[in-house]
Length: 503
Ligand SMILES: Cc1cc2nc3c(=O)[nH]c(=O)nc-3n(C[C@H](O)[C@H](O)[C@H](O)COP(=O)(O)OP(=O)(O)OC[C@H]3O[C@@H](n4cnc5c(N)ncnc54)[C@H](O)[C@@H]3O)c2cc1C
Image 1 (cartoon, rainbow, N blue to C red):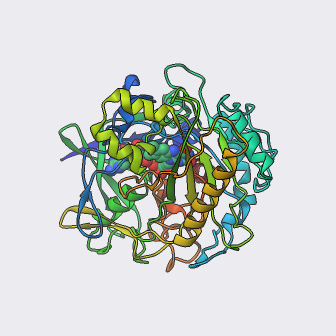
Image 2 (cartoon, protein in one colour; image 1 turned 90 degrees about the vertical axis):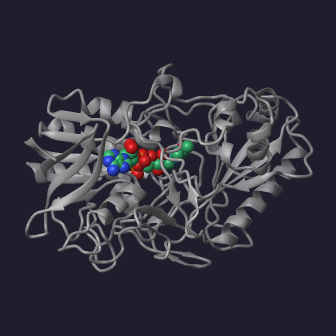
Image 3 (cartoon, rainbow, N blue to C red; image 1 turned 30 degrees about the vertical axis):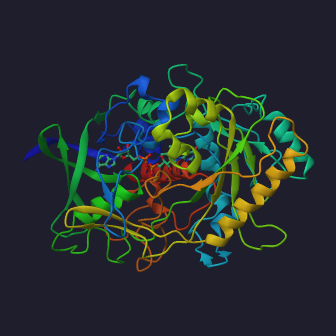
């Protein structure tokens, strides 16, 4: 074991939406910052691949296996690279709705209130949208919460294929709007990710060091047990211990929890920061179902998502509980999650030659139905005999089913008014399998009471003064919109707090 002879002010572990965003926020402080990332930089030709390749299973999966509740192994769709999952995300950056932060009744229970409210995070949402160059319009969606600033760029328009469909939706009295998207406009990397807008900006400062591949395997506490004194990482074939005044985990909700549990010691026998026994628990991921609609005209199969519908976000005439968010999947040949989901394409993908598969994809339009779920302490990440267990049962069934069936009704009506969609009798659909873990949240929930939460309102561990967690772990509840912008905004909020603390 090597003990690194440098001492840093801050170590950040992980470079995704949380870690990358925080790194660029702290970099101008001039403090000595070390970033440890287990993956490497992704080769450009691997990025943003839009081809039948995305249907070939296990692209963009981590090179390891996790184990479900029954002990069955699966290969998680999660990306270990500089930029984390933002290197492969769809770059849809939506704000949570204001009521999402409140104690929100669902049919199966109440989603817990957050320790801060929408108004507290709002300035950080605006800052995150500026940083990630979001193209959007906040005008037309009745559920959109107030914005203190405009989006930095106007919304990207809909594909010609989608325009009549959007008009048809409006004719039904719905309020389709454009999805806010982060785009760099660079040909070599069109998505706006945490490598480009986080790590690369941070590394412009001489006080910031990035080490890759550097997998952190354990955290060591000082004799008091109240502070982290060492961060142990595998760097190449060496085991090195780094030290810093402040340690920030941003490994993603599953890996940050696993690291805390793996770092158990005599003073923290259940794992670090785990006096509440909540580390790893309340694991959440959205209910995500894709619905396929056959089109009467072909499309490129390679266009970005653009349509957002939130008319059923809080329920409908017959159902008083939140149902969720609808968006189109964009061209099916570039939707990485889609490739694993619908019965139609994922099964056929294994047997069909690329040309037939492409034919199917370019004659279809995909829609995502996204519903939140409730935290459940039985849904958890834990380590058993060295294996990472991802013990997860979905909940909030009726809300999600109602959203899916409501949307199929909308699509059926569309067929009577829009020429570009076929008259479909069936709408193939499928919910994402357990291996789709990109929307993982909640394993170190944030709160004011150390007996019912792991982190305080600035994502500092209640039990360990110099330890923070800024990835998706902190979410007390699971919204129906994508979590990435909230993770980025929260990282900026925590960043403000850390800038004060580091002075
Ligand atoms: C295909 C796909 C599409 C998506 N599309 C959207 C979308 O359109 N909109 C949206 O809001 N969300 C989307 N998401 C979800 C979004 O990408 C995640 O919510 C977000 O990236 C999570 O940020 P994070 O900081 O929690 O973790 P991540 O972005 O996963 O970053 C974690 C980082 O930590 C590193 N790491 C892990 N363990 C260690 C360790 N032990 N030592 C060192 N480094 C470590 C990883 O390599 C990674 O770089 C999508 C996800 C996927 C997979």
